[in-house]
Length: 219
Ligand SMILES: *Cc1c(COP(=O)(O)O)cnc(C)c1O
Image 1 (cartoon, helix red, strand yellow):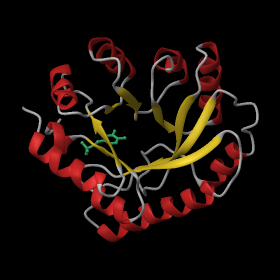
Image 2: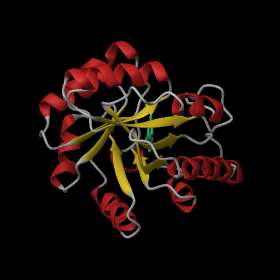
Image 3: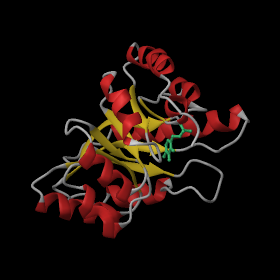
């Protein structure tokens, strides 16, 4: 399956005019597909699995900005911290502390997004607002982390009103977070929207979308 370069150009133009960033989600897709999009000028790629990310990172150009968008286990943090650009799925203080520790060892400040649970489905990871506030109360020792914003996934449903409600809820939490002053917070990124719902996400305030199948074909 070839990369949908026409579709990419259409999407990236649409996004650029609105200053929305695109993470091309390349999980399960071969290095050759990533290289094709890279050669078209794209630098931001998202991966879900640590082992796969490590192999691709070694095989591909060093200026690619790797986004980790999967569920990150604490014991795998140290493998991606040396090079990762943005970790989207952070949903516990334990994970934040581990990233902070490994970032310190590497002399890096690692950028992360906190993942909020916005969908009705039980299976999705993420924080509720109370858990978010608990984390925000304990940021002081995290001197090798920058929290850039929030990430969320809407319910997988045809019901547009449900998806829209979830996205607008996440935007309201994001706006509240943006108003808080703290050295660990540098809030400018709201990562929401995938192939099937990104226009709705943008309509509700997203400024970073994560798109896979529209660009690389079905997985
Ligand atoms: C796979 C994945 C995507 C991309 O999904 P598509 O429907 O292929 O666009 C986006 N975000 C996360 C967290 C994913 O796991």
